[in-house]
Each structure stands twice: as structure tokens, then as C-alpha cells.
Image (cartoon, rainbow over all chains, first blue to last red; front, side, top):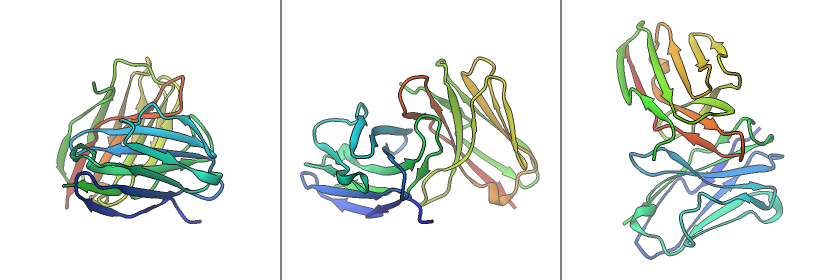
Length: 114
Length: 111
């Protein structure tokens, strides 16, 4: 069974540019989460999808971040325009069960904004 | 503000030694998870504890959830080089579906 895959693994962009991160969850997992780890800080929740619906987007930093999950399969997270403070590792995780369910994480996308 | 504090932040020990990592909060959690993360990879779930006072064992690893559901500990007996990694605790509250992560404990076990 394939795990959670994220693309790209690394992205280096200049301030003001646009970047789109992609996450393919484990097949059959309705729950998809985006998390972010900024250097020196803890992993922080960004948002949660149940199928194609945004269940909780309380962690999204601002309106420069847009997440979509059309069709309830893969998800994209777009940052436009990127700022220096957006640098960090963006993790995607999926689970079958909500709440106390087991989260399966992808390897993350390392985003560097210069 | 940091919801979950982990200590120590860094730990370097010799193979065969024992160690304990702590995860503390002033908040109450419905459940708490421990993950291990290796460089270039995402966190991998080790255990979930859901009952106050619960103790779970996974080979040489012992996990405990505090009676008040505010803290947890991870004890490793006779550490091996393969135990090297970043250990993260993550708590789920009674409402909502997100997990709140600690800053992690970076463990290095020297052969």
C-alpha cells in the first residue's frame, strides 16, 4: 500500500512568487491534514479536509494560503505571493478515522523563500 | 504560546543507557500520541494513549499518560543506535480534530 506522497520534496522560490504543494493521501482516507513546521518551532496545524470539504481551516496563517481538495482525492496548497516567513517544512497527513485516528504523514515539502 | 513542552530538547547518550522524555502541558487532552521522525521523513506514529494513568509498552519503549491527562512520558530502556531520531508528542483536545505538537526531543544514541 502506497503511503502519503508529497511533491515536490524541496522548493526554493523568491519572495513574491507562487508555489503549489501537492499531497496524495493514502487511498480511501477521507481525512487529509496540512501541517507546517517553521524552523525552531513546533509542527502546527493548518487545516483539515474531510473528503473535499474543509472541516477546519483555523490554522491557515492568512489569505495568501489556499488549500483545495477537488474530488476528495489529492490536495494542493498554494502560497501566493510567498513571503520569507513562509519558509518551513509543510507536512500532509491522512487518516481513515477522525479524532483519535492514526495519522500517516508524508515526507514533507521543504519550502525556502529567499 | 507553546501548548506542549517537551524536555529535554536534546539528548545524547551511550548505547545501553536508559532515558526518559517528558511532555507537559497545562491543558487537558482527550488523547496523546508519540511519534518518531527521522531526517527527511515525516513523523511515524509509535503509540496513542487515551486513558488517564494509562501505561503502554512497545518492546523497550514505555509510554505513560498522566492521571490528569496533562502530561506524558516516554521511557526507553537499553537504548540502541536505531532509537536515534526526533521524538514528538502530540495531543488531541476533546473538541476538534487537530493535534497539537510539542517541539520535540532530538535523541542521539552513540554506539
